[in-house]
Amino acid sequence: MTQVADFEQMWRDLAPVGRSASSGGYFRQPWHSAELELRAWFREAATARGLELEEDPFGNLVAWWGPDSLGSGTDKVLTGSHLDSVLDGGAYDGPLGVVSSFAAVDLMRSRGVQPARRLGVAAFVEEEGSRFGRACLGSRLAVGTTTWDVARELTDREGVRLGDVIEGGTSTLLDGVATYVELHVEQGRGLIDLDAPVGVHSAIWPHGRYRYDIAGRADHAGTTRMEDRADPMLTYAMTALAANKQARLSGQRATFGRIDVRPNGTNAVPSHVTAWLDARAESDAALAALVAAVEKQALDRGGRDGTTVTVTPESVSGEVAFDTALRDELVARLGGVPVLPTQAGHDAGILQDAGIPTAMLFVRNPSGVSHSPYESAETADCLAGVEALADALTGLVAP
Image (cartoon, rainbow, N blue to C red; front, side, top):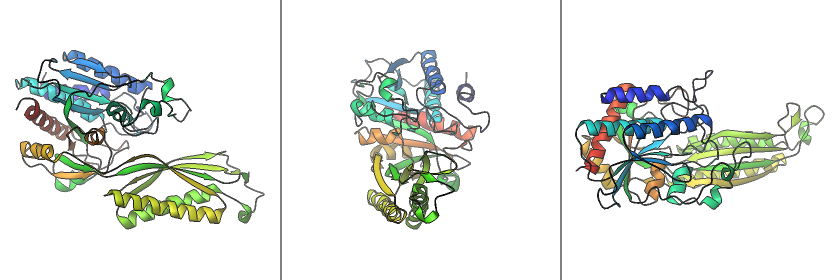
């Protein structure tokens, strides 16, 4: 088959998996049926290409091209992305990078490339943090920045412990990996504005997730006077508005996208609200200032409402600057494509922070929308991404 046919067939194979008939979005949460089906597809794709499959105790997968004897064993090149999605997410966030990686290997082979370094295609697990609440959990466990002793106690929304889902242990999956290149759909409008199909990321904005626990007093919705209430929902509402205002004023990002209300009755004043703030900023200092400003306004409002506010950082990642030499090499090899930062977190940021030189390619998203069923990419742009990835990887494994 041609490289075009390979890509399009792989995409048709993945398209129905985990898709909602009502919204058109995807529900591919880790260790549930849809995501497990995608991992089975990954294994089949690796086997069909004669690639050696390796899996660590956390469910991270790598399909290796080339025998162990290639190179020194400590200069492997890795590409890939993830297969899980946010709740009701888009088709391209993650899977585009995995499919494009397999297609790039196909294209390199059709060109007669003979790798001098071992090349792996990776699928990291729980990148979105949509089930156990930790973004890039699989890659964090693989590099050791999150320990299994901590991760095993994480629980999902149903109270299921990660330690009861997988056995865990220690990962050696990334031993010998010297370079990582990840392709991803763009999650904004940068390439639309520049009228370019493919670009390179320079850095990832610092970002974090913060849990707000707001405690009040349950009461009757009809008989309790407004002035006699200690309503945590009011404190939350003010905090959400404050986050929006502070982010707009500073040119940063702040989002409350998840909330849990108890007892969650229509005719009762809540006793407790738990809400999660996603905050992102152009620098570590700007992120700290944004988070502090939102917390201050929440505490002030809690004092007026008679509620208590507790803020817990659940996962915070500092700014990640991708390897400059690798970035410049890719830009030159690809003929001067645009270079832009990203406000989204990626496994690439985890590997770069762990000392593995890393670069990111991204493909134009004509909707400019991500983490949504409206996320999109044109086939022509995806194929341009495959060719760019193949060119980049060829320069790394067969210079």
